[in-house]
Image 1 (cartoon, each protein chain N blue to C red):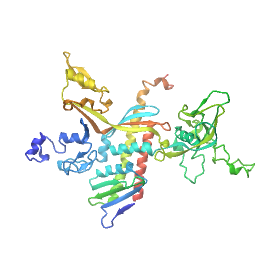
Image 2: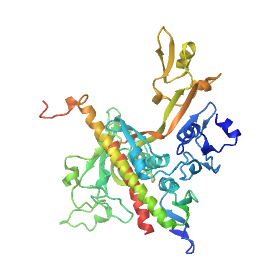
Image 3: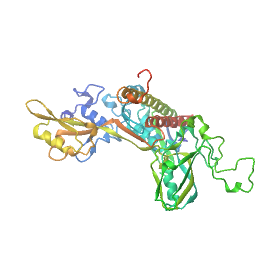
Image 4: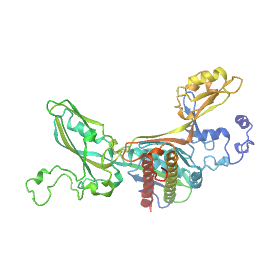
Length: 390
Length: 111
């Protein structure tokens, strides 16, 4: 219909079926949905009908639809009215929620911060006193680094190059495992990492000569006080998140004795500091049956979908009709629009401003806290820019 | 750091160190919605340098002020996201307690 009007050279804003301040339905669809056609997704990149410039993803330029009397600028009050969050599931470590009415650039900023810029504690230095196992020192150290620790990083400071390791920036663990002669081979698991609230027990070699009998011998850390006397750890001893991670296997007469020092860091330095196993989002799938699909066609459609998105409903007298029962489980495999004229019957789309966000925490902090911390970090970044500009 | 001219303050390039797509893309999105902005874009000149350049051209207002406003907008947006999220989580936590995890909660008034 639209193309017919265009051929008569009627300006698009004079179209009788489109009230001023609204977009024609087909452009509105392109603006708000990604269409997944048989060969490729389209309208991921959309044209501005005004300036024929290509904008990425959503058209976000404020004047993009100005010629049609549509103000494309989204101001804060409008955002506040439309933005919604719905928690789908929330457990100790995992969470899934819907974020509706936000742009991909902001959702992606949260995701990137969760993965790379939220601090956690992880083992950074390993002091090996004895290792006669088959696993090499550096491999063992690397494995130790990747063990998730159950420590709230907000109680700690970053340790810079010139800082002495103290109770505010370091957590010390001890591991001493030995397989006795004649015994069976043993597994060294992560629950054998024992927290040392008083810091390192290994004495500095330089201190041996001029040891003062009155003061404590100097070790690799200089703790001012014991960590278990601090109120935040008094009833909450620091340990590894999982006790059953195999660190090494020992044969008879083999032994590992080491001390591991954990410090605060960020995921962009090394993935061991990432507080999430994964954090990702996907756009909400939307499946629309363009025509009524009945009888054999309906059964064929139900069979086509590997994740059982479609169901059959009875519309009386034993007649069957296909319905979209579980659009959320759609993986956009596009099986349902393969072959024949299926593309004319079924439309597979994604809603551009509806994100299904999933956070899997590694255990340092619960996932809902991680997300609020991530938002806070984005706020801090803005604040930094403002202070630098003024 | 700002690279602009004193004669024409309506266009400038800003260099942020230690920032990447996370901030630059968010700011680009916010600025693109500002009617005062005629062009905004960002680039990361080299992937090994931790820096990002943001180009802002306006229809007359000083680019620096427009950029500052966008950061404030982004902060307000973040605050709203936090509030909405906290509400949704609190609501979710209050919901299943009555049904699923009732046995796990020790509520002296409820025994």
